[in-house]
Amino acid sequence: MWKELKALFKHTTIYGMGGVLGKMVGFLMIPFYTHYLTPADYGTLELLDLTLSLMGIVLTMWMNAAIIRHYHDYEDDHNRGQVIGTTLIMAALIGIGVAALGIAWARPLSSLILKTPAFYPYIRLVSLSFFVSCITAVSWSYLRAKQQSVFVVGTGLLNLVLSLGLNVYFIAYLRVGVIGILYSSLISGSVIALIVTTNTLRRGSLRFSLEKLKAIIAFGAPLIATSIAAFTVNFSDRFFLRHFGTISDVGIYALGYKFGFMLSFLVVQPFDMIWGARMYEIAKQENSKDVISRIFSYYSLALIATALGMCLIIKEVITIVAPPQFHAAYRVVPLVALAYVFQGMNRYFLSGVYIAKRTIYLAAVGSSSAVLNLLLNYVLIGHYGMMGAACATAISFSFMAVLACIVAQKAHPVPYSFFRLIMPLALAALLYLSSTLVIGSLVVAIALKLALFILFPVGLYLMGFFEQREVDKARELARVFLVRSGMRTAAASGRG
Image 1 (cartoon, rainbow, N blue to C red):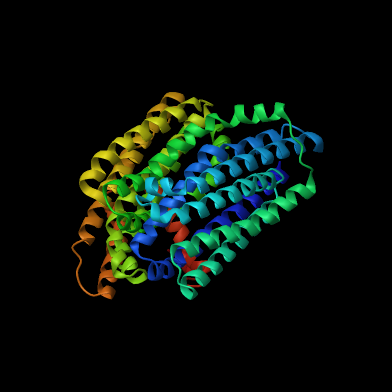
Image 2: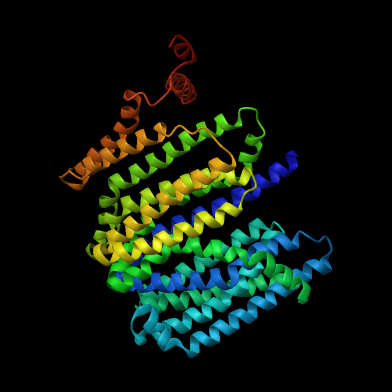
């Protein structure tokens, strides 16, 4: 048992560190991108990237889960080779077909996505990149199935370094703009595809099985609907924003969304990596439902506190890292951050669905939220532009969280204390609204907003949010910290 837990922790840590490092490097490059690219360039890249992601979701992403699932159905190399070979051949054929259509129909597709046929070279490069990504995705899934986490993360980071280096060359040195980023993505992606596919073929020959193809499709096809629903709620607003506004609006909004999305990879994703396995162990305990409820209180508090800290200083941060034409992006961050507070809660509520093995509810929650999001995007973005898009996202995720709570309570009732959720939400909203009244120099504004952030835990304490045992535990932890840091002697700590 310990061996399994140790292996799980090792691979999870490696994947998590690789993902966080990649995202952090991406954020550090924001000043570079916004210096050399206009909001219109940024918006164009966003739409092209989302188009590529949507094609991947519909055509190939479902294969990844199917590969891992069916790979572990067999113990012998022959059948495992057939699973990988069949999927790799299928992915290659899909990639070739999409690339050929994208190249042939580049002009009409450019008109559809970017509202002008002039960007048809972009569509052709994206189409070629899709073919490369199809091959790479299958090979990476094979490596994940073999638990080659170091190799997966290593090649991922190599791809990141190559891509960033080529971006600097094309954008800063050659100054070719958007098409340079597309070229760098294609080149770096091709290098990685060659490495991982060679590794895959070296470990097993290409074997095709019609029987296994049918099984892979039967397992993976239902996942398409869930993936499309998630894509819709997260990203469909960009396409509405392009329809009702300008490509520059999309670029500014994309930058703001990127900052709001930080809440997901700073809190939601790391927590999910632990909670996804731990919740089943807790569910076996006699007082499991009380434990799940209490953990939710702390988790939601962490979400709200992180979102508040981010929103208080986001205006100053964007002012520092981005040129003036991007500064309006800060306005959407609070709503996007709020959306991901609710997204984190939604994922937590669904713990009950997983524990009760009633995953059929996932499709209902996802599809209902996607439909609502599309309606809200149409109505709100048409009238309010970027702020309408941010509002639609926040409302959709809050609806998703409420719906998830309802269905989860039917599957596995938990006595959540929603008072302990409403109180910090209300206080955080009050502090954020107060921060909008702060005026003065950059240094003064940051200092005052940090003071407001400190008021958050103080205010909760004065309002009676924390129970006495929580206060006592916090004092105990503080004493231990002071002793270990040398700031207080053990004797003095004992007398205190």
